[in-house]
Length: 189
Length: 374
Image (cartoon, rainbow over all chains, first blue to last red; front, side, top):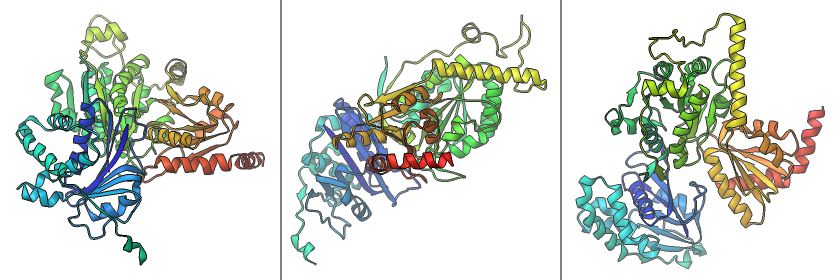
């Protein structure tokens, strides 16, 4: 099994850390992993993305053009990466702040209202864990217990008291992905 | 016990230096290698092993501190990125001239000038064709994974002391910034002066009690002596070619076409090889692990088997010259690469192979021959 994922959004949304937790989760189930950030003069509010690969075999390229899954968290990333999902692949996005919804009919598309759900839970910072949960519901490539183990590894010990909250957020995400149907009318104009 | 971790290439390299029993690190921050000095500082190696870690006032100061520590046969390392390495080159030439062991790490970014902070392989010429002044070579290792970033530190120290010559680890922003699984080796003890003398001889300045004084210098105003020194260096480089050449062949046995690539480009090219084979095109990959010495002989031999070779590098065409020299015009050799910090995708590499080699190979071969006759 190989899963090639791009996670893209604004800096500060937890894009890189979501990728890191996925990578750690892969290690917990003895997989090969790679985590390749688009580093640069980026900052809070700018764009950030990371390519994460989990595989049972040795990973060749950590840098890709097309992906099995795109996790999209802002409009710029939607514009950039919708076309990069392999046919039959998965696009999952938070509709909050998205004005131009995806148009492809050859991929599976889901929405997760991460921002709204995080606000309901009273902690905006766990937004990325809600999105991760939704992804893992649709593609259970890592087990929840391995994600929790991964969290333990990637978080400094002083934050370990937040792990139950993260688990709750992941579960919340798992319960809330909504399949998105691209309306056929779009293509008539 | 060895230890499994998820680390950035730069961090793995820094941790490996502590564990390899390095005595000192002198450096100056620059993107994309700043994690090396950040990690070393945060790990407090002076408490773990007694290793000295110092942020110098400049790259030039750092390389001269390396010269000083290397003169006493201590295991010393420095790291920087392209513009910083350019500043260090005077010192690197002195290290080679004075025959001192040291490990220098270049996490390459795009150039020339201040260029960009994104990954690049445009320092190939600088690394293998001298860079600094005079007749010298560095032993150059090119890691292609986070694991190799860690493993090559110890290998580099071994080679530096075996040959009493500076060793360069030529990485880039991609390998330095990405995270992968890495297995770290056990902590090695730092060597005492007595152990250094027993292991490597008494060439270093370790205090002259009971022996003639040792002089460490790259200056020799008597031409005959200086020529003898240059000849001695050339002998070492020949020995490196015979004993310590490293490369990896991937799916070369049945290959009709060959990609040559090192470091990050080798990883991306390997995916291009996989994509090609899915389409039924038999492509192999030769990955030089040492860039000096260069795998000339394996390339020369593979040129009898394949119909064409593509050199894939994140630059405007540098290593392709060494590939051409190695295969001696037996088959067409072309270059493909992106610059400015843009990274080529596996799909782009495959397309370049199809366009430049598979489709036009024989045509271009004749053109090259005609122009070389004229």
